[in-house]
Image: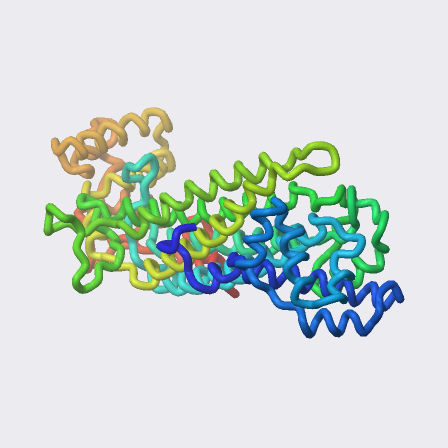
Length: 454
């Protein structure tokens, strides 16, 4: 991943030095296990741990010659140890070190991602509660539908973020798996006790049936989970981009002092942070697809997965780490415009109450399909600027006795109450309460249940 999107802590996990250090710990722990079994001298293990050093440049030089990364690594470390270096890698195969080390790297990366997800969840909770009463128009197909609150919108993001945290925990458990089973995974020259000891010390589970490699369905599930987390961040980003559009103007990314939006147009304030998150989410989906391609290897193993994982593992975790930090920052500093939300809500003079009027008419004895035509006709006349919604409703000959301000308001009691202040042109006030004023959404689900305990 390019440095532009690499945060230091995540980037460090994927350095050559960090990878080699994990490999070295696996090799030394294997020697410890063998020493406990009396297979190599205990003094040799002490010498190996004391003298072993990693020289990435020397490893690179050796790999250029032998064309094998683990051979180059073991050779370089043995050079620093001396004669006792001959005990390194006894009975092991390359995948034992590679896959077990890979599990350690992925687990470390996932720990950072979980911390980032927790910060996102906390910010979403605060934002949702702060705006649980901030009224706005809900939209379906991009069109005005019925009233919601901005807090409920954010609570939906919060609920999804909590689910994603659970997904990431499960996916991390699934890839926190190693193997030290030797060639083709049959423990031909290494005792299973060695694997048990090493993986126990590392806090990893054992692949129950290794075929020399850890099965790649685990990794496919992990990278697919990262893509899901990215898609959820993209969902938030796309919503912010829509809300920031000039003709909507209900919310806006932070725009810092000295920031410029366009090289040509000084007035521009573009949602570049959310657009950035949207773009990176596309990469995560591509990486998930590549991980799925790695599941089917030849026979017990090949290394067609290796080149893919060298790219997607650092890139996917670094990208998601960056996305989490970026979107959390956007939400922490999001500019919310309740007055613009209210203006858009009132834009068409109560048309968005059409369902409530429809139901009120049905309750008063109208045939539903007839009432639907009356309300639709009135709504369309109002949207076209030919009449107010209320006047158009009253103009329906078979409807005039049923439609009045009081009747309309009574029929809309789950959404509105009469008020002397903050009234829209329909003569009522929007409120995020039901008729009993008990702080519940129209569905009856307590708002706080969306963010309780998170």
